[in-house]
Image (cartoon, rainbow over all chains, first blue to last red; front, side, top):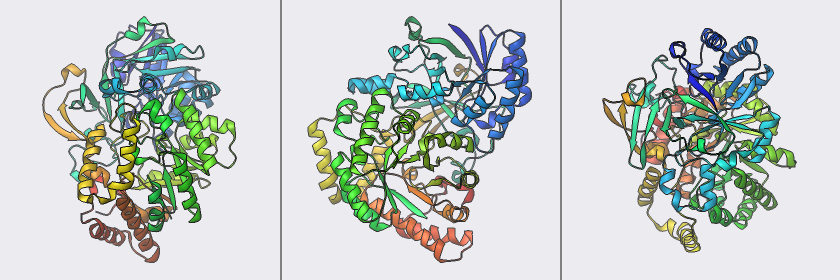
Length: 262
Length: 354
Protein backbone atom coordinates (compact mmCIF):
# COMPACT_ATOMS: atom_id res chain seq x y z
CA UNK A 1 0.00 0.00 0.00
CA UNK A 2 1.35 3.37 -1.01
CA UNK A 3 0.91 6.15 1.53
CA UNK A 4 0.35 9.67 0.35
CA UNK A 5 0.11 12.86 2.39
CA UNK A 6 -1.99 15.62 0.90
CA UNK A 7 -1.02 19.29 1.36
CA UNK A 8 -2.72 22.37 0.09
CA UNK A 9 -0.48 24.74 2.05
CA UNK A 10 3.17 24.93 1.06
CA UNK A 11 4.26 25.94 4.57
CA UNK A 12 2.71 22.83 6.03
CA UNK A 13 4.46 20.74 3.41
CA UNK A 14 7.78 22.39 4.23
CA UNK A 15 7.45 21.71 7.93
CA UNK A 16 6.23 18.10 7.67
CA UNK A 17 8.61 15.19 8.23
CA UNK A 18 6.99 13.44 5.22
CA UNK A 19 6.74 9.92 6.53
CA UNK A 20 5.11 8.77 3.29
CA UNK A 21 5.84 7.45 -0.21
CA UNK A 22 4.28 10.29 -2.16
CA UNK A 23 3.05 13.81 -1.65
CA UNK A 24 -0.01 15.43 -3.15
CA UNK A 25 0.09 19.18 -3.46
CA UNK A 26 -2.62 21.53 -4.68
CA UNK A 27 -6.27 22.17 -4.17
CA UNK A 28 -9.47 20.41 -5.23
CA UNK A 29 -12.27 22.77 -4.37
CA UNK A 30 -11.47 26.45 -4.80
CA UNK A 31 -9.89 28.17 -7.77
CA UNK A 32 -9.05 31.14 -5.56
CA UNK A 33 -6.50 28.87 -3.91
CA UNK A 34 -4.68 27.51 -6.93
CA UNK A 35 -1.01 27.43 -5.86
CA UNK A 36 1.45 29.93 -7.26
CA UNK A 37 4.17 28.80 -9.63
CA UNK A 38 6.77 29.45 -6.92
CA UNK A 39 4.93 27.22 -4.45
CA UNK A 40 4.60 24.47 -7.04
CA UNK A 41 8.36 24.68 -7.71
CA UNK A 42 9.10 24.41 -3.99
CA UNK A 43 6.76 21.43 -3.62
CA UNK A 44 8.41 19.65 -6.55
CA UNK A 45 11.90 20.31 -5.24
CA UNK A 46 10.94 18.95 -1.80
CA UNK A 47 9.54 15.81 -3.46
CA UNK A 48 12.73 15.37 -5.46
CA UNK A 49 15.06 16.02 -2.50
CA UNK A 50 13.20 13.62 -0.26
CA UNK A 51 12.77 11.05 -3.03
CA UNK A 52 8.98 11.06 -2.86
CA UNK A 53 6.47 10.54 -5.61
CA UNK A 54 4.49 13.64 -6.57
CA UNK A 55 0.89 14.35 -7.54
CA UNK A 56 -0.42 17.79 -8.43
CA UNK A 57 -4.02 18.24 -7.29
CA UNK A 58 -6.22 20.49 -9.41
CA UNK A 59 -9.68 21.93 -8.86
CA UNK A 60 -12.76 22.82 -10.88
CA UNK A 61 -11.91 26.15 -12.37
CA UNK A 62 -13.61 29.20 -13.80
CA UNK A 63 -12.90 30.69 -17.21
CA UNK A 64 -10.77 33.46 -15.75
CA UNK A 65 -8.60 31.21 -13.60
CA UNK A 66 -7.86 28.41 -16.05
CA UNK A 67 -4.93 30.43 -17.42
CA UNK A 68 -3.09 29.62 -14.21
CA UNK A 69 -3.21 25.93 -14.97
CA UNK A 70 -1.77 26.38 -18.47
CA UNK A 71 1.27 27.86 -16.79
CA UNK A 72 1.44 25.46 -13.82
CA UNK A 73 1.01 22.27 -15.83
CA UNK A 74 3.57 23.46 -18.34
CA UNK A 75 6.05 24.03 -15.53
CA UNK A 76 5.21 20.70 -13.96
CA UNK A 77 5.88 18.92 -17.25
CA UNK A 78 9.30 20.57 -17.47
CA UNK A 79 10.32 20.03 -13.87
CA UNK A 80 8.93 16.54 -13.37
CA UNK A 81 7.96 15.02 -16.73
CA UNK A 82 5.11 12.55 -16.67
CA UNK A 83 3.95 13.59 -13.19
CA UNK A 84 0.52 12.67 -11.95
CA UNK A 85 -2.17 15.34 -12.11
CA UNK A 86 -5.36 14.75 -10.16
CA UNK A 87 -8.12 16.20 -12.32
CA UNK A 88 -11.43 17.41 -10.93
CA UNK A 89 -12.57 19.35 -13.98
CA UNK A 90 -12.72 17.72 -17.42
CA UNK A 91 -11.27 20.90 -18.86
CA UNK A 92 -7.94 20.18 -17.17
CA UNK A 93 -7.64 16.79 -18.85
CA UNK A 94 -6.70 18.17 -22.27
CA UNK A 95 -4.05 20.51 -20.86
CA UNK A 96 -2.67 17.58 -18.92
CA UNK A 97 -2.46 15.29 -21.93
CA UNK A 98 -0.97 18.03 -24.11
CA UNK A 99 1.87 18.24 -21.59
CA UNK A 100 2.37 14.45 -21.45
CA UNK A 101 1.43 14.40 -17.80
CA UNK A 102 -0.39 11.45 -16.20
CA UNK A 103 -4.05 12.18 -15.44
CA UNK A 104 -5.72 10.67 -12.39
CA UNK A 105 -9.51 10.83 -12.02
CA UNK A 106 -10.11 13.03 -8.97
CA UNK A 107 -12.89 12.34 -6.50
CA UNK A 108 -15.12 15.18 -7.71
CA UNK A 109 -15.51 13.37 -11.01
CA UNK A 110 -16.26 10.05 -9.30
CA UNK A 111 -19.96 9.75 -8.71
CA UNK A 112 -20.08 8.10 -5.33
CA UNK A 113 -23.18 8.89 -3.29
CA UNK A 114 -21.89 10.64 -0.21
CA UNK A 115 -25.07 11.93 1.44
CA UNK A 116 -24.51 11.22 5.14
CA UNK A 117 -28.21 10.32 5.52
CA UNK A 118 -27.77 7.22 3.38
CA UNK A 119 -26.88 4.81 6.15
CA UNK A 120 -30.07 5.79 8.01
CA UNK A 121 -32.47 4.75 5.23
CA UNK A 122 -30.35 2.11 3.52
CA UNK A 123 -32.28 -0.80 5.00
CA UNK A 124 -35.50 0.39 3.37
CA UNK A 125 -34.15 0.14 -0.14
CA UNK A 126 -34.22 -2.54 -2.84
CA UNK A 127 -30.96 -4.47 -3.25
CA UNK A 128 -29.85 -2.89 -6.53
CA UNK A 129 -30.43 0.52 -5.09
CA UNK A 130 -28.37 -0.32 -2.02
CA UNK A 131 -25.58 -1.61 -4.20
CA UNK A 132 -25.45 1.63 -6.20
CA UNK A 133 -25.07 3.58 -2.98
CA UNK A 134 -21.92 1.60 -2.17
CA UNK A 135 -20.50 1.89 -5.67
CA UNK A 136 -18.41 4.42 -7.56
CA UNK A 137 -21.09 5.27 -10.13
CA UNK A 138 -18.61 4.55 -12.93
CA UNK A 139 -20.06 2.23 -15.54
CA UNK A 140 -17.93 0.10 -17.85
CA UNK A 141 -18.65 2.57 -20.63
CA UNK A 142 -17.22 5.31 -18.41
CA UNK A 143 -14.17 3.20 -17.59
CA UNK A 144 -13.62 2.34 -21.26
CA UNK A 145 -13.64 6.05 -21.97
CA UNK A 146 -11.10 6.66 -19.20
CA UNK A 147 -8.73 4.18 -20.85
CA UNK A 148 -8.91 6.13 -24.10
CA UNK A 149 -7.84 9.20 -22.14
CA UNK A 150 -4.87 7.45 -20.50
CA UNK A 151 -6.50 7.49 -17.07
CA UNK A 152 -5.56 4.41 -15.05
CA UNK A 153 -6.11 5.61 -11.52
CA UNK A 154 -9.38 6.55 -9.83
CA UNK A 155 -9.66 8.35 -6.51
CA UNK A 156 -12.40 7.51 -4.04
CA UNK A 157 -13.88 8.70 -0.80
CA UNK A 158 -14.23 6.30 2.10
CA UNK A 159 -18.06 6.27 2.23
CA UNK A 160 -19.79 6.13 5.60
CA UNK A 161 -22.11 3.42 4.26
CA UNK A 162 -19.08 1.45 3.02
CA UNK A 163 -17.71 0.86 -0.45
CA UNK A 164 -18.41 -2.10 -2.70
CA UNK A 165 -15.02 -3.78 -2.86
CA UNK A 166 -16.20 -6.26 -5.51
CA UNK A 167 -16.59 -3.40 -7.94
CA UNK A 168 -12.90 -2.55 -7.56
CA UNK A 169 -11.43 -5.74 -9.00
CA UNK A 170 -10.96 -4.45 -12.53
CA UNK A 171 -7.29 -5.02 -13.39
CA UNK A 172 -7.27 -2.03 -15.71
CA UNK A 173 -7.46 0.45 -12.86
CA UNK A 174 -5.85 1.24 -9.55
CA UNK A 175 -7.72 3.07 -6.85
CA UNK A 176 -6.76 5.59 -4.17
CA UNK A 177 -8.85 6.30 -1.12
CA UNK A 178 -8.92 9.50 0.91
CA UNK A 179 -9.02 9.28 4.68
CA UNK A 180 -10.46 10.44 6.96
CA UNK A 181 -12.39 13.24 5.20
CA UNK A 182 -14.77 12.69 2.31
CA UNK A 183 -16.36 15.57 0.48
CA UNK A 184 -20.15 15.82 0.35
CA UNK A 185 -20.79 18.98 -1.60
CA UNK A 186 -19.11 22.14 -2.78
CA UNK A 187 -20.12 25.58 -4.00
CA UNK A 188 -18.77 28.79 -5.47
CA UNK A 189 -20.87 30.72 -2.94
CA UNK A 190 -18.47 30.61 -0.02
CA UNK A 191 -20.29 30.86 3.31
CA UNK A 192 -17.24 32.20 5.10
CA UNK A 193 -16.53 34.73 2.38
CA UNK A 194 -20.07 36.07 2.46
CA UNK A 195 -21.26 35.63 6.01
CA UNK A 196 -20.61 39.22 7.10
CA UNK A 197 -22.13 40.76 4.00
CA UNK A 198 -25.63 42.21 3.86
CA UNK A 199 -28.32 39.59 3.35
CA UNK A 200 -28.83 40.42 -0.31
CA UNK A 201 -25.21 39.70 -1.16
CA UNK A 202 -24.78 36.45 0.75
CA UNK A 203 -25.71 34.35 -2.23
CA UNK A 204 -23.20 35.96 -4.57
CA UNK A 205 -20.10 34.56 -6.19
CA UNK A 206 -17.39 36.95 -5.06
CA UNK A 207 -13.60 36.97 -5.01
CA UNK A 208 -12.04 35.58 -1.83
CA UNK A 209 -10.83 38.11 0.71
CA UNK A 210 -9.03 35.68 3.01
CA UNK A 211 -7.08 33.21 0.92
CA UNK A 212 -4.67 32.33 3.68
CA UNK A 213 -7.30 31.33 6.21
CA UNK A 214 -10.32 29.32 5.09
CA UNK A 215 -13.10 29.18 7.64
CA UNK A 216 -13.99 25.98 9.45
CA UNK A 217 -17.22 24.99 11.17
CA UNK A 218 -18.84 21.85 12.50
CA UNK A 219 -22.36 21.34 11.19
CA UNK A 220 -25.11 19.60 13.12
CA UNK A 221 -28.36 18.61 11.46
CA UNK A 222 -31.23 16.64 12.91
CA UNK A 223 -31.54 14.43 9.82
CA UNK A 224 -27.87 13.48 9.90
CA UNK A 225 -26.41 11.55 12.77
CA UNK A 226 -22.78 12.23 11.83
CA UNK A 227 -21.30 15.66 12.28
CA UNK A 228 -20.31 17.38 9.07
CA UNK A 229 -17.48 19.85 8.60
CA UNK A 230 -17.61 22.94 6.48
CA UNK A 231 -14.18 24.10 5.33
CA UNK A 232 -14.24 27.13 3.07
CA UNK A 233 -16.66 26.38 0.24
CA UNK A 234 -16.94 22.62 0.82
CA UNK A 235 -18.70 20.27 3.22
CA UNK A 236 -17.04 17.06 4.41
CA UNK A 237 -17.88 13.96 6.42
CA UNK A 238 -15.35 12.10 8.51
CA UNK A 239 -14.84 8.34 8.39
CA UNK A 240 -11.84 6.80 10.11
CA UNK A 241 -12.83 3.18 9.40
CA UNK A 242 -10.33 1.30 7.27
CA UNK A 243 -12.38 -1.80 6.59
CA UNK A 244 -11.28 -1.65 2.94
CA UNK A 245 -7.76 -2.64 4.03
CA UNK A 246 -8.92 -6.14 4.92
CA UNK A 247 -10.25 -6.81 1.46
CA UNK A 248 -8.57 -7.92 -1.68
CA UNK A 249 -9.14 -5.03 -4.07
CA UNK A 250 -7.25 -2.73 -6.36
CA UNK A 251 -7.03 0.00 -3.73
CA UNK A 252 -3.28 0.41 -3.50
CA UNK A 253 -2.97 4.00 -2.31
CA UNK A 254 -4.18 5.82 0.78
CA UNK A 255 -4.30 9.60 0.65
CA UNK A 256 -3.94 10.87 4.20
CA UNK A 257 -5.57 14.19 4.91
CA UNK A 258 -3.77 15.61 7.93
CA UNK A 259 -6.47 18.23 8.19
CA UNK A 260 -9.71 19.03 6.41
CA UNK A 261 -8.67 20.04 2.89
CA UNK A 262 -9.16 23.64 1.82
CA UNK B 1 -35.28 34.18 -27.03
CA UNK B 2 -36.74 30.80 -26.16
CA UNK B 3 -38.32 29.61 -22.93
CA UNK B 4 -37.55 26.03 -21.93
CA UNK B 5 -40.12 24.89 -19.37
CA UNK B 6 -40.78 21.70 -17.38
CA UNK B 7 -43.81 19.43 -17.45
CA UNK B 8 -44.61 16.55 -15.11
CA UNK B 9 -47.89 15.29 -16.61
CA UNK B 10 -49.52 14.89 -20.01
CA UNK B 11 -52.34 17.20 -18.95
CA UNK B 12 -49.89 20.06 -18.48
CA UNK B 13 -48.44 20.13 -22.00
CA UNK B 14 -51.08 22.24 -23.73
CA UNK B 15 -51.30 24.79 -20.90
CA UNK B 16 -47.54 25.13 -20.65
CA UNK B 17 -47.16 25.68 -24.39
CA UNK B 18 -50.11 28.07 -24.51
CA UNK B 19 -48.56 30.03 -21.64
CA UNK B 20 -45.53 30.63 -23.85
CA UNK B 21 -43.05 27.75 -23.54
CA UNK B 22 -40.99 27.34 -26.69
CA UNK B 23 -39.55 23.99 -25.62
CA UNK B 24 -40.52 21.59 -22.88
CA UNK B 25 -38.50 19.11 -20.86
CA UNK B 26 -39.49 16.17 -18.73
CA UNK B 27 -38.25 13.05 -16.99
CA UNK B 28 -39.48 9.49 -16.80
CA UNK B 29 -39.71 7.30 -13.72
CA UNK B 30 -41.03 3.99 -14.98
CA UNK B 31 -42.07 0.87 -13.09
CA UNK B 32 -38.98 -1.09 -14.10
CA UNK B 33 -36.91 1.52 -12.30
CA UNK B 34 -39.16 1.75 -9.27
CA UNK B 35 -39.10 -2.04 -8.92
CA UNK B 36 -35.35 -2.27 -8.93
CA UNK B 37 -34.26 0.97 -7.32
CA UNK B 38 -37.26 2.49 -5.59
CA UNK B 39 -37.11 6.22 -6.09
CA UNK B 40 -33.44 6.46 -5.16
CA UNK B 41 -30.99 6.78 -8.06
CA UNK B 42 -33.71 8.10 -10.34
CA UNK B 43 -32.39 8.49 -13.89
CA UNK B 44 -33.13 12.20 -14.02
CA UNK B 45 -32.35 13.45 -10.50
CA UNK B 46 -36.03 13.98 -9.65
CA UNK B 47 -36.83 11.34 -7.08
CA UNK B 48 -40.51 12.18 -6.66
CA UNK B 49 -43.02 10.28 -8.80
CA UNK B 50 -45.08 13.44 -9.03
CA UNK B 51 -42.24 15.17 -10.88
CA UNK B 52 -42.08 12.54 -13.62
CA UNK B 53 -44.02 10.92 -16.39
CA UNK B 54 -44.53 7.32 -15.40
CA UNK B 55 -44.66 5.36 -18.67
CA UNK B 56 -43.85 5.52 -22.38
CA UNK B 57 -47.47 5.94 -23.40
CA UNK B 58 -47.52 9.21 -21.51
CA UNK B 59 -44.29 10.27 -23.18
CA UNK B 60 -45.72 9.44 -26.58
CA UNK B 61 -48.78 11.56 -25.81
CA UNK B 62 -46.62 14.45 -24.62
CA UNK B 63 -44.57 14.34 -27.82
CA UNK B 64 -47.73 14.10 -29.94
CA UNK B 65 -49.31 17.17 -28.35
CA UNK B 66 -46.05 19.13 -28.40
CA UNK B 67 -45.36 18.27 -32.05
CA UNK B 68 -48.82 19.42 -33.06
CA UNK B 69 -47.82 22.80 -31.61
CA UNK B 70 -44.30 22.77 -33.11
CA UNK B 71 -42.70 22.50 -29.68
CA UNK B 72 -39.64 20.32 -29.14
CA UNK B 73 -39.49 17.95 -26.15
CA UNK B 74 -36.25 17.37 -24.25
CA UNK B 75 -35.87 14.23 -22.15
CA UNK B 76 -33.76 14.55 -19.01
CA UNK B 77 -31.32 11.68 -18.48
CA UNK B 78 -28.97 13.74 -16.43
CA UNK B 79 -27.98 11.59 -13.46
CA UNK B 80 -24.62 9.80 -13.09
CA UNK B 81 -25.00 6.10 -13.65
CA UNK B 82 -23.47 2.93 -12.30
CA UNK B 83 -23.37 -0.19 -14.46
CA UNK B 84 -26.95 -1.41 -14.14
CA UNK B 85 -28.31 2.14 -14.32
CA UNK B 86 -26.51 2.98 -17.52
CA UNK B 87 -28.19 -0.03 -19.15
CA UNK B 88 -31.49 1.25 -17.82
CA UNK B 89 -30.75 4.74 -19.13
CA UNK B 90 -29.88 3.39 -22.58
CA UNK B 91 -33.06 1.31 -22.60
CA UNK B 92 -35.04 4.38 -21.60
CA UNK B 93 -33.34 6.41 -24.30
CA UNK B 94 -34.02 3.88 -27.06
CA UNK B 95 -37.64 3.36 -26.04
CA UNK B 96 -38.08 7.13 -25.80
CA UNK B 97 -36.61 7.55 -29.27
CA UNK B 98 -39.20 5.06 -30.51
CA UNK B 99 -41.79 7.39 -28.95
CA UNK B 100 -40.29 10.30 -30.88
CA UNK B 101 -37.70 11.81 -28.56
CA UNK B 102 -34.83 13.39 -30.46
CA UNK B 103 -33.24 15.62 -27.78
CA UNK B 104 -31.80 14.56 -24.48
CA UNK B 105 -30.16 16.25 -21.53
CA UNK B 106 -27.13 14.26 -20.38
CA UNK B 107 -24.35 14.59 -17.82
CA UNK B 108 -22.83 11.11 -17.47
CA UNK B 109 -19.63 10.42 -19.41
CA UNK B 110 -20.40 6.70 -19.70
CA UNK B 111 -23.78 7.40 -21.28
CA UNK B 112 -22.37 10.10 -23.56
CA UNK B 113 -19.61 7.80 -24.66
CA UNK B 114 -21.95 4.91 -25.46
CA UNK B 115 -24.39 7.20 -27.28
CA UNK B 116 -21.48 8.31 -29.43
CA UNK B 117 -20.51 4.68 -30.11
CA UNK B 118 -24.04 3.68 -31.04
CA UNK B 119 -24.35 6.58 -33.46
CA UNK B 120 -27.90 7.88 -33.25
CA UNK B 121 -27.84 10.26 -36.19
CA UNK B 122 -30.92 12.30 -35.30
CA UNK B 123 -30.35 12.64 -31.60
CA UNK B 124 -29.46 16.08 -30.29
CA UNK B 125 -27.32 16.12 -27.15
CA UNK B 126 -27.74 18.85 -24.57
CA UNK B 127 -25.05 18.84 -21.92
CA UNK B 128 -26.73 19.16 -18.55
CA UNK B 129 -25.91 21.79 -15.96
CA UNK B 130 -24.88 18.77 -13.85
CA UNK B 131 -21.91 18.29 -16.17
CA UNK B 132 -20.36 21.25 -14.32
CA UNK B 133 -19.13 23.43 -17.15
CA UNK B 134 -17.17 26.35 -15.75
CA UNK B 135 -14.67 27.07 -18.50
CA UNK B 136 -14.09 26.84 -22.24
CA UNK B 137 -11.72 23.85 -21.96
CA UNK B 138 -14.54 21.85 -20.40
CA UNK B 139 -16.82 22.76 -23.30
CA UNK B 140 -14.06 21.71 -25.70
CA UNK B 141 -13.89 18.41 -23.85
CA UNK B 142 -17.64 17.77 -24.14
CA UNK B 143 -17.62 18.70 -27.82
CA UNK B 144 -16.14 15.27 -28.57
CA UNK B 145 -19.63 13.90 -27.80
CA UNK B 146 -21.24 15.87 -30.64
CA UNK B 147 -23.31 18.15 -28.45
CA UNK B 148 -25.62 20.82 -29.80
CA UNK B 149 -26.31 22.72 -26.58
CA UNK B 150 -24.67 23.45 -23.26
CA UNK B 151 -26.90 24.12 -20.26
CA UNK B 152 -24.65 26.31 -18.21
CA UNK B 153 -24.18 25.78 -14.52
CA UNK B 154 -26.22 27.87 -12.14
CA UNK B 155 -23.07 29.15 -10.50
CA UNK B 156 -21.59 31.16 -13.32
CA UNK B 157 -21.40 34.91 -13.30
CA UNK B 158 -22.82 36.94 -16.13
CA UNK B 159 -19.39 37.87 -17.42
CA UNK B 160 -18.33 34.21 -17.47
CA UNK B 161 -21.48 33.33 -19.41
CA UNK B 162 -20.79 36.13 -21.85
CA UNK B 163 -17.25 34.89 -22.39
CA UNK B 164 -18.32 31.28 -22.97
CA UNK B 165 -21.16 32.28 -25.26
CA UNK B 166 -18.81 34.41 -27.36
CA UNK B 167 -16.23 31.62 -27.60
CA UNK B 168 -18.66 28.97 -28.83
CA UNK B 169 -20.89 30.65 -31.38
CA UNK B 170 -21.63 27.28 -33.01
CA UNK B 171 -23.27 25.92 -29.86
CA UNK B 172 -26.57 26.83 -28.27
CA UNK B 173 -26.21 28.10 -24.72
CA UNK B 174 -29.02 27.68 -22.21
CA UNK B 175 -29.11 29.45 -18.85
CA UNK B 176 -31.35 29.22 -15.79
CA UNK B 177 -33.77 32.07 -15.40
CA UNK B 178 -36.24 31.06 -12.67
CA UNK B 179 -36.50 28.87 -9.54
CA UNK B 180 -34.26 26.56 -7.55
CA UNK B 181 -30.96 28.30 -7.40
CA UNK B 182 -29.27 25.89 -5.08
CA UNK B 183 -26.45 26.91 -2.80
CA UNK B 184 -24.37 23.96 -4.01
CA UNK B 185 -23.02 23.08 -7.45
CA UNK B 186 -25.50 20.48 -8.69
CA UNK B 187 -22.97 18.38 -10.64
CA UNK B 188 -20.66 18.10 -7.65
CA UNK B 189 -23.26 17.88 -4.92
CA UNK B 190 -23.74 14.35 -3.64
CA UNK B 191 -26.66 14.98 -1.32
CA UNK B 192 -29.56 12.81 -2.46
CA UNK B 193 -32.79 14.58 -3.30
CA UNK B 194 -36.13 13.23 -2.19
CA UNK B 195 -37.82 11.31 0.57
CA UNK B 196 -36.82 7.72 0.21
CA UNK B 197 -38.74 4.63 0.90
CA UNK B 198 -38.81 1.03 -0.17
CA UNK B 199 -39.82 0.35 -3.78
CA UNK B 200 -43.25 1.84 -4.19
CA UNK B 201 -45.79 -0.96 -4.25
CA UNK B 202 -48.60 -0.94 -6.79
CA UNK B 203 -51.09 0.51 -4.31
CA UNK B 204 -48.81 3.45 -3.49
CA UNK B 205 -48.18 4.09 -7.17
CA UNK B 206 -51.90 4.05 -7.91
CA UNK B 207 -52.66 6.34 -4.97
CA UNK B 208 -49.98 8.80 -6.06
CA UNK B 209 -51.26 8.67 -9.61
CA UNK B 210 -54.82 9.47 -8.53
CA UNK B 211 -53.54 12.21 -6.25
CA UNK B 212 -51.46 13.72 -9.00
CA UNK B 213 -53.98 13.46 -11.81
CA UNK B 214 -57.36 13.85 -10.12
CA UNK B 215 -57.20 15.42 -6.67
CA UNK B 216 -54.35 17.89 -6.66
CA UNK B 217 -56.15 20.55 -8.72
CA UNK B 218 -58.89 20.75 -6.06
CA UNK B 219 -56.56 21.51 -3.17
CA UNK B 220 -56.14 25.24 -2.52
CA UNK B 221 -52.82 26.59 -3.75
CA UNK B 222 -51.98 28.12 -0.38
CA UNK B 223 -52.15 24.70 1.26
CA UNK B 224 -50.18 23.10 -1.54
CA UNK B 225 -47.54 25.79 -1.22
CA UNK B 226 -47.09 25.00 2.47
CA UNK B 227 -46.98 21.27 1.73
CA UNK B 228 -44.47 21.78 -1.05
CA UNK B 229 -42.29 23.95 1.16
CA UNK B 230 -42.26 21.27 3.83
CA UNK B 231 -41.46 18.51 1.37
CA UNK B 232 -38.53 20.57 0.10
CA UNK B 233 -37.36 21.38 3.60
CA UNK B 234 -37.45 17.77 4.72
CA UNK B 235 -36.21 16.08 1.60
CA UNK B 236 -33.41 18.38 0.44
CA UNK B 237 -30.57 18.30 2.89
CA UNK B 238 -29.36 21.68 1.67
CA UNK B 239 -32.72 23.27 2.53
CA UNK B 240 -32.86 22.10 6.13
CA UNK B 241 -31.24 24.00 8.95
CA UNK B 242 -27.86 23.36 10.51
CA UNK B 243 -26.27 24.48 13.70
CA UNK B 244 -22.83 25.68 12.74
CA UNK B 245 -20.17 25.79 15.42
CA UNK B 246 -17.58 28.28 14.37
CA UNK B 247 -14.08 26.86 14.41
CA UNK B 248 -10.39 27.51 14.10
CA UNK B 249 -8.00 26.33 11.45
CA UNK B 250 -6.51 22.93 11.95
CA UNK B 251 -7.90 19.66 13.19
CA UNK B 252 -11.59 19.26 13.81
CA UNK B 253 -10.83 18.75 17.51
CA UNK B 254 -10.05 22.42 17.75
CA UNK B 255 -13.50 23.46 16.64
CA UNK B 256 -15.49 25.27 19.25
CA UNK B 257 -16.92 28.66 20.06
CA UNK B 258 -19.85 30.51 18.60
CA UNK B 259 -22.94 28.68 17.44
CA UNK B 260 -25.10 29.90 14.61
CA UNK B 261 -28.18 28.51 12.89
CA UNK B 262 -27.72 28.44 9.14
CA UNK B 263 -29.74 27.31 6.15
CA UNK B 264 -27.78 27.06 2.92
CA UNK B 265 -30.82 27.24 0.66
CA UNK B 266 -33.81 28.86 2.35
CA UNK B 267 -36.76 26.73 1.13
CA UNK B 268 -38.98 29.75 0.36
CA UNK B 269 -36.44 31.82 -1.45
CA UNK B 270 -34.73 28.82 -3.06
CA UNK B 271 -37.99 28.03 -4.81
CA UNK B 272 -38.38 31.64 -5.92
CA UNK B 273 -34.86 32.24 -7.24
CA UNK B 274 -34.98 34.58 -10.18
CA UNK B 275 -32.69 35.94 -12.87
CA UNK B 276 -35.20 37.80 -15.02
CA UNK B 277 -33.40 41.16 -14.78
CA UNK B 278 -30.45 39.48 -16.49
CA UNK B 279 -32.57 38.87 -19.60
CA UNK B 280 -31.51 42.38 -20.53
CA UNK B 281 -27.87 41.32 -20.60
CA UNK B 282 -28.55 37.95 -22.20
CA UNK B 283 -30.42 39.72 -24.98
CA UNK B 284 -27.37 41.90 -25.60
CA UNK B 285 -24.84 39.07 -25.51
CA UNK B 286 -26.96 36.70 -27.56
CA UNK B 287 -27.86 33.88 -25.16
CA UNK B 288 -31.10 32.47 -26.50
CA UNK B 289 -32.40 29.64 -24.30
CA UNK B 290 -33.84 30.22 -20.84
CA UNK B 291 -34.62 27.38 -18.51
CA UNK B 292 -37.37 27.54 -15.93
CA UNK B 293 -36.44 25.03 -13.27
CA UNK B 294 -38.76 23.07 -10.98
CA UNK B 295 -41.60 20.59 -11.36
CA UNK B 296 -44.17 22.22 -9.12
CA UNK B 297 -47.89 22.68 -9.74
CA UNK B 298 -49.23 23.51 -13.18
CA UNK B 299 -50.52 26.88 -11.99
CA UNK B 300 -47.01 27.82 -10.84
CA UNK B 301 -45.48 26.57 -14.04
CA UNK B 302 -47.77 28.61 -16.28
CA UNK B 303 -47.44 31.72 -14.08
CA UNK B 304 -43.64 31.46 -14.32
CA UNK B 305 -43.73 31.05 -18.08
CA UNK B 306 -46.06 34.03 -18.51
CA UNK B 307 -43.79 36.15 -16.35
CA UNK B 308 -40.70 35.33 -18.43
CA UNK B 309 -42.66 35.74 -21.66
CA UNK B 310 -43.87 39.17 -20.58
CA UNK B 311 -40.37 40.19 -19.57
CA UNK B 312 -39.06 39.14 -22.98
CA UNK B 313 -41.75 41.09 -24.78
CA UNK B 314 -40.98 44.21 -22.69
CA UNK B 315 -37.35 43.78 -23.60
CA UNK B 316 -37.98 43.31 -27.29
CA UNK B 317 -40.76 45.88 -27.56
CA UNK B 318 -39.36 48.84 -25.66
CA UNK B 319 -36.02 50.62 -25.83
CA UNK B 320 -35.22 50.62 -22.13
CA UNK B 321 -32.12 51.29 -20.10
CA UNK B 322 -31.08 48.40 -17.86
CA UNK B 323 -32.27 50.19 -14.74
CA UNK B 324 -35.67 50.94 -16.24
CA UNK B 325 -36.04 47.32 -17.30
CA UNK B 326 -35.20 46.08 -13.79
CA UNK B 327 -37.74 48.46 -12.25
CA UNK B 328 -40.41 47.16 -14.60
CA UNK B 329 -39.51 43.57 -13.76
CA UNK B 330 -39.72 44.21 -10.04
CA UNK B 331 -43.18 45.72 -10.50
CA UNK B 332 -44.19 42.77 -12.62
CA UNK B 333 -43.03 40.28 -9.99
CA UNK B 334 -44.94 42.15 -7.32
CA UNK B 335 -48.05 42.26 -9.46
CA UNK B 336 -47.91 38.57 -10.40
CA UNK B 337 -46.76 37.01 -7.16
CA UNK B 338 -47.72 39.61 -4.54
CA UNK B 339 -44.21 39.62 -3.21
CA UNK B 340 -41.13 41.73 -3.51
CA UNK B 341 -38.14 40.77 -5.60
CA UNK B 342 -35.66 38.79 -3.44
CA UNK B 343 -32.15 39.96 -4.21
CA UNK B 344 -30.88 37.30 -1.82
CA UNK B 345 -31.81 34.67 -4.37
CA UNK B 346 -30.93 36.53 -7.52
CA UNK B 347 -29.42 34.17 -10.08
CA UNK B 348 -27.14 36.82 -11.52
CA UNK B 349 -26.63 39.31 -8.73
CA UNK B 350 -23.75 41.03 -10.47
CA UNK B 351 -26.12 42.28 -13.12
CA UNK B 352 -29.20 43.30 -11.16
CA UNK B 353 -29.67 46.99 -10.56
CA UNK B 354 -30.83 46.95 -6.96
